[in-house]
Length: 336
Ligand SMILES: Nc1ncnc2c1ncn2[C@@H]1O[C@H](COP(=O)(O)OP(=O)(O)OP(=O)(O)O)[C@@H](O)[C@H]1O
Ligand SMILES: [Mg+2]
Image (cartoon, rainbow, N blue to C red):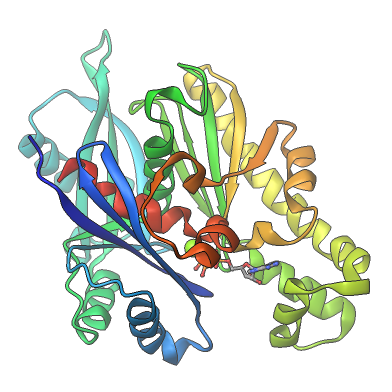
């Protein structure tokens, strides 16, 4: 039997740092801590992480964190069935077919997804992250005396958070395909899934900062002032909604392209979208994106589905949309 332990999911974004602590064993876990802090400027990321952990009394040493962005490449490829060791060797040997970097410059991981087809082929998930990206991330954390036990990728965390909340199909019918879409500041992460084998992930680099820039252009304001306007739009709300609409259309068409790909590949329609990320807090975004996706869309509130054993109500309620990736990172506890 798995023993009780705690894991801290630490999501270091470009706009905010978030943490979720899960405690328990196997699937029986409770949220025992949460934290959120805005990053005032890029040089202060380390200080912000330390302040957020100390203010929220988050002391667990078992930390799962993530990397993401253009230096993380994910491919889904078909290969002959083989053992995990043979698979990694085969992928390394053929890596230049799939990734635009030298195999020596990347950390490679791969996993067989699902079963084998009639031609003895299996679907393989291949993740290649630039070594320098991981080394810089680990060095930054080491400077804060944090030694992560696992380094994940944001869009996998998104899917894992959903799976944790959806135990026993609480959120969707069995066999339904859904999409989790997290709109942060620098990127929109997409994870479409139905089962372990029918999974597709992607990142699009249009998100909250593109909305900020669109509003800044319209109002002739500095981006940092628009950040404050976004949180308290007052009478400017309609003009702001109008100026971010083209950005929502861009995000929407990329998400729809991913749906089309998924539906072609797996012959299943995406039936529901669960939205998260700081950007969905702007009034009207969830409804507008639902209209663009042409699929039922809701804001994902993960803490409604989990046992809560912390009284940090402000973060739990006001920042729930931001916390999904951190929750998904912590959900690695299920396999520990
Ligand atoms: N209350 C709010 N109303 C409107 N927009 C908001 C609000 N709070 C945050 N945002 C926007 O959400 C975005 C930040 O989202 P989030 O905290 O998820 O980003 P991040 O995870 O740090 O970024 P990334 O994952 O892209 O590196 C910013 O563009 C910010 O302007
Ligand atoms: Mg993020």
